[in-house]
Image (cartoon, rainbow, N blue to C red; front, side, top):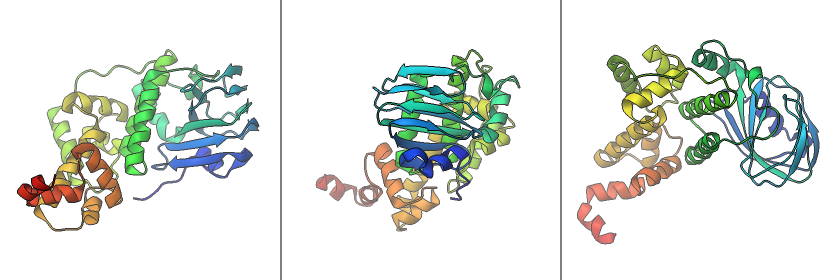
Amino acid sequence: MTMLPLSASAQWYRQGHCGYNVRSMKSPGSVLDLLEIERPPGSMSRAATPDLLLCQDLQGGAYVSGNWGGGRFNTTSEKGALYLAAPNFAPVSTVDTTHHIRTIAFPVAHWQKIVDEAAGGEFSFESLQLYGGSFHSLAIRTALRNLWRLSDDEGAPSRLLAQAAGCEILAELCRLSGTPFKPVKGGLAPWAERRCTELMRARLSEDISLDELAAEAQLSTFHFARMFKQSVGVPPRVYLTRLRLERACELLEMTDRPVTDIAYEVGYSSNQVLARVFLRHQQTTPSDYRRAMRDPVNSAVRH
């Protein structure tokens, strides 16, 4: 998988400015950058970057003050609280204790066209009404938790996963700001559903993007994601996982190819990643699955 450049925000944090400790970083490159950070107490300021930065407090109890693009704020942070830093704004903040946070950087250059299409050309990142301190959203917290869990399985989020999660989070940020995206009615046309599912099946080994699937259906990225789910019943990333597992099962049953080769063919970076996905969805390992399919009687006895 070719890794695209990191966002400006991710590069800044990775360079260790102001004593930040980056515990982990996951990135599909130029779409979303996910970082888990431990920030020391004290004041911090940084140069403006062309990224929308969403942060989540993982422990709570810190006194936080600063300006992230919506004016000065002071608050005692709660576990799970969210903060939003405006793009092209130089944020400043102070915390009185070590602060454990997760952040997602949205490179505006990638997301501007997507949100413009979703909002009918009436969207501006600067107009979001959430830069003035902490806020809460169950929908965003759930999306973040699922994104991190799936990224732990895959090692890094695929472009399909990152774009789908980004659309979901940005839609909620706009709703909370009073500028909801236009609702989507109906699902995909039969021809569009067929072409998209065939494309996913043909390119299992590739890091296919939501943009490419949307273009195949001649729809905007944001609207395609919701219309696909209405037609197929699950989001595109879930459907792609199903296709990959179906193909992996077929290869395990019908061939003697190494599990690592099978993992590569169905789009996973290693046999360990395939094993994690297999355990989550099949409740067994690829090797045990192969043995059970080849010799079901003895496999049943052993278990």
